[in-house]
Length: 166
Image 1 (cartoon, rainbow, N blue to C red):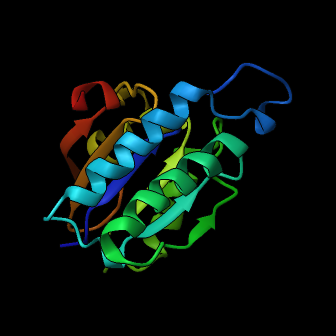
Image 2: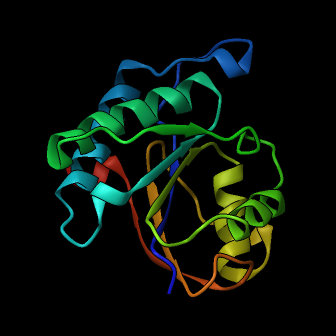
C-alpha cells in the first residue's frame, strides 16, 4: 500500500489581483498554523519522511511554509517545500494523477493547492470522476489511502478542517 496522500486547500486569502499573488489573510495564517500543529501531533503519520509539495501561488506557498514550521517543531527539521506548477486552481486533475503515478509513493505526501482543483482531484482519485469531489473549507486536509495513487483507486480516510480543531 502507498503511504498516505494528504490534499490540502490553502488558508483563507485576501482578495486581490493578479490571483497568483494573493496572500493569506490573518485568519488564513492561523488556519495553516492550526492544521500544521494537528499534523505534527499525529503519531500515525511519519512526519520525518513527509514530502511537502505546493502550488507556486503565494497563498499556497505561505500555507506550506506555516505547516512546515509546525512540523519542524516535532521532527526537529523542517521539510523542504517542492513547488509543482501543475497544481494551480484550474489545472487538470488527470495531469496531477499522471504526475502522482510517476512519483515514488513510499513516503507520505502533502499537496497544498486550491479549489476547484483539490475537489476535482479527490473526486478523480476516489470515484474516478472529477465532478464527484468533496468540498474543502480553507486549510482543510483530506487524507486518502490507496494501493496505487490512480483514478478511482483511493479511499477517503478523513477530512479535517481548522474549525473542527477548536
